[in-house]
Length: 203
Image (cartoon, rainbow, N blue to C red; front, top):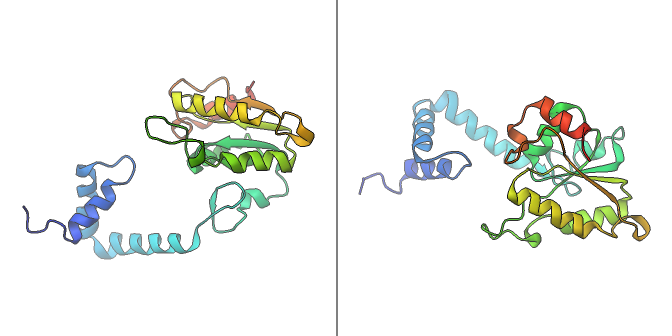
């Protein structure tokens, strides 16, 4: 066993390895890069992380990340308050916002249903979605979820639950992204034009 096992360096490497898309080798490279540049890279990063942890909040309305609660998107009076776009995570909201093709409200689920990962409806923000639809009077719910098995399952589940959850007990109109989204594709990896086309061509 190495003399540095469970020391500060190993703890740093493990922390990076737990991040999405990073394996042990990438985590080690990042840790060594930061440690060799403490003043120019590591300390500014530590400050940025600490500042973000203190100032960034989760919007109590939609689940977005912002310095304000409600977030700036929810507070924007110019947005269409009658249309709600349901996305899996904040990165998907950002991907749609980059296109400039959508000017309504959002609801972030916090993930997708996944039997393999043990993620059920109670683990997502589905109950709060139903509450918003029931009380906020939306005309249309856009399910902007990934065209994966988990994304499709989540969309079907939400569609079933939304029946009868519109204003005065009427079912709200539910649409899904259509053309331009490839099967197996995640929104955050698609180009802006593809997402914009899918939004405009939803059915």
